[in-house]
Length: 106
Image (cartoon, rainbow, N blue to C red):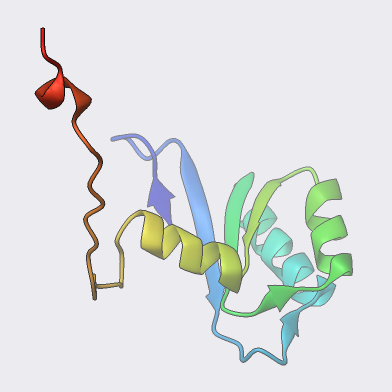
């Protein structure tokens, strides 16, 4: 659970599944998650998977009253790189350009 404010009034629930590339998260898993949100009187959640979501799962998440964000493996890896979480720099490249002001004769 993520608390967005100091009093804990705005809460976002998170569920994560570590699946292999061949297994997708389907509608039943998202339905269970939405049911758990309702049971906790929550209206926002994030469901993360290392694999992907079936089209039925995506459609269901879009149609429920609760705000459910789906993050698949591709989006997760992008977020990890963007925010430097769980990754390390392996190589850094510096690209140079000519400083034309340096060569200006004025």
